[in-house]
Length: 407
Image: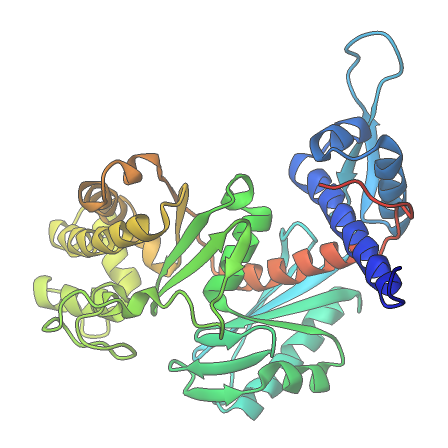
């Protein structure tokens, strides 16, 4: 005889299975659209009736639409193809740094429609919250007060579930409940994430990682970061601290770093490190010169500037070989302001990675340099908000009420 508590458990299991099917159907449209219902059913091993019910609810909710009919391939009616309506809502992304805020307004495909930058009076949490509130108000005005979700990212260890910044050396923060502070001020749900993890999430949903279940995002700029995507999900670690690639020790007697320990990757690859090496090796490099200045010199063919980036590239390649040995990814996306070094950085990094990695693991790794713009970090935050909005829209959309087929 069944225990009385078995019934709600079965109901919960059915609800969970239904939500999984709804999300899987939506993901099929997102990743493979335009796509027909019959192709979705075949790929997911769902009944055509279940797919029809789920897609009907998605259409009714406004996140999927019937775009056109497929080309004729034989006798019978031509299938109707489905696509995601990425213009169904607008989302905002805000990147917090010690230099200020970078903000982006995007559609649900993380395509940037508008960008803004805002200064901050200081990095004190209350002052940052004030600045974010003003920036959000400005973005929402541009959007006609129709922002559906907002993502906020920043450098440091972030507990995304508790929406707390555990530590951020760049901002000087420890244990800041920023998500709750922002929600109380903005009056909307806020997704809080580490900046590189948000970028990796956006790459998985909207970028180079869409076709890869296991890949890495490595960033260079003020610091050196790592986003880890395993089985299609961003891996954050139990407390949100995974991916501190820049703190990997290369040489305990190496150069010092402003935000990391001596001899770490960050001490060799950050913007500060590039400027330090340029001052040491470029006789005419100005005292106020920046990493962007070094990159321009390298692009113009200055051999000493090229040598600075080549040296950094060898160090980066050593770090990448460690990642290949640990994760055996199919893709590594190189991103961040530091990638302005271009081929002078990437070529030696790729060569060194392939030389040092174990066996033939590196032979199967695709290296992609993401096109970098000032809005990239904010786009990463917006992509986080867009994907959450799309998933929640999909799983709230009703769908098949019978027992779903197993995926």
